[in-house]
Image (cartoon, rainbow, N blue to C red; front, side, top):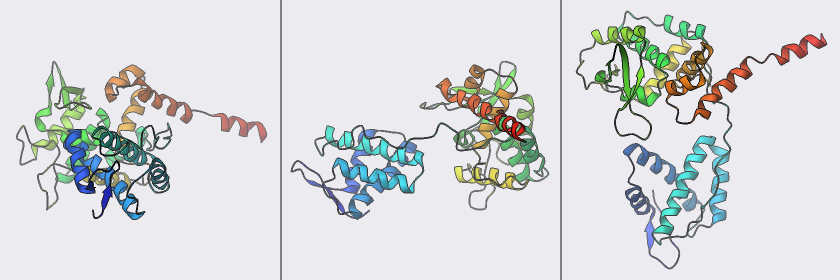
Length: 308
């Protein structure tokens, strides 16, 4: 990124790259968070440079937020604004620049989910539409089956190693890394059928070392390597489209929503669903109950019946 940002109080002029680098070193975050911070800060500096702002004010940050609201999703706006607040907290703490972003809010995010869940019949259709006589089909079937029966996040699928699928007591479990944790100290109960499906897939794998990825790429450029977020999204989307499910609201994350919805519909309590989904706040889990209340609401039909 080209350009320089002058900092106030008569201090030196810092190049934007140097400011960001120093901030990231101070933050001392994990590589994934560092990547997110970097991605969120660059647009801020591009905005300041594009508008020839060398000494930004609080009003400038508000204007930057308004531009973000016009061009970005609410979740992205909140990420960028949170990072901006952390950045200016740091500049003030270090005596580089006053905290002009203190208490500035991001976007109002709707409590409703941005992704839809599949019904049980749609889930069956996706699985039944996969040809499991091919290596790719076996992998995709096992990946989707495990993801939906365990309510896995995409990152949990990516990070899963073969050794993480093991036995605890008398049942199969998958160890995953809990949010904010460094190690895989949390585990999910895996149904006997899901365990069988995954192990059937592994029988045809070349690399079945304990530290090998549970699911691997079959692409020419990354054969045998760990899957990426993009590749998992593509796998799930392709399998959904193959059976006519082609909505922008149906994505890889829909598999997790499907798991939650089917568990609650199946009679599991909100508390059990919270444990199953690894939610810290039960309020997050209760959003699924609210979604089901809306789904089962027949007021429109009742009103229609009253006027025809």
